[in-house]
Amino acid sequence: MNELPDRSRSIAGRVAIVTGAASGMGRATARLFASEGARVAVTDLDAATCAAVASECGSGAKAYALDVADKDAITRVVAQIAEDFGGVDILVNNAGISSFCALDNDGYEEIWHRALAVMLTAHQRMVRAALPYLRASDAPRIVNVASTEGLGATPGDTPYVAA
Ligand SMILES: NC(=O)c1ccc[n+]([C@@H]2O[C@H](COP(=O)([O-])OP(=O)(O)OC[C@H]3O[C@@H](n4cnc5c(N)ncnc54)[C@H](O)[C@@H]3O)[C@@H](O)[C@H]2O)c1
Image (tube, rainbow, N blue to C red):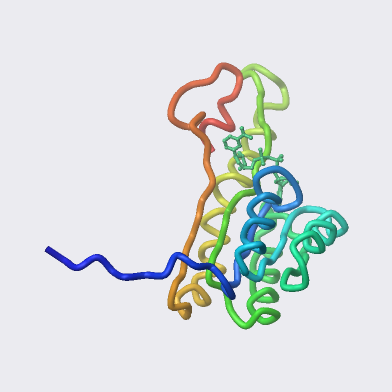
């Protein structure tokens, strides 16, 4: 049998990108990681809210406005984070939106595309943008936040469930 690798569970000193970190679980993750000694890139739609969360996380954190539905912004901001921190060790794809919409609603197409852009396409784009830096890390980690809603069917919530 293969030996189990003896890896440290510490994230002290690691550089972590958290998307959707201005509120809810993203904010809690950023704060928890910072309290464990990680250096956190707090990213979300609004720069001022990111700055407020970064200041809660302490001097090791920095704030970045990032709309994960914006492909070019992902490329630019991830590269900027890697330059500012000297690398990336951990990526947490957490940004998400509520997207309840009945199938026969006029706005359905728009909500469908937004849900998939933010909660599916963004994940692979973030991973691919961070990949060169994660590969250079000796302890790279990717966390993709999803929902148990995706395991079943919820009436009126098809865009979210599919994403
Ligand atoms: N709350 C729950 O019960 C629950 C359950 C299962 C999964 N989730 C998932 O967990 C994640 C966090 O959920 P939460 O409850 O903390 O939600 P939340 O609304 O408190 O936080 C989501 C954050 O994502 C940000 N965001 C939205 N669109 C964005 C975009 N285009 N670019 C960057 N940031 C964007 C928002 O500004 C917000 O700060 C989501 O992916 C959600 O789908 C939540």
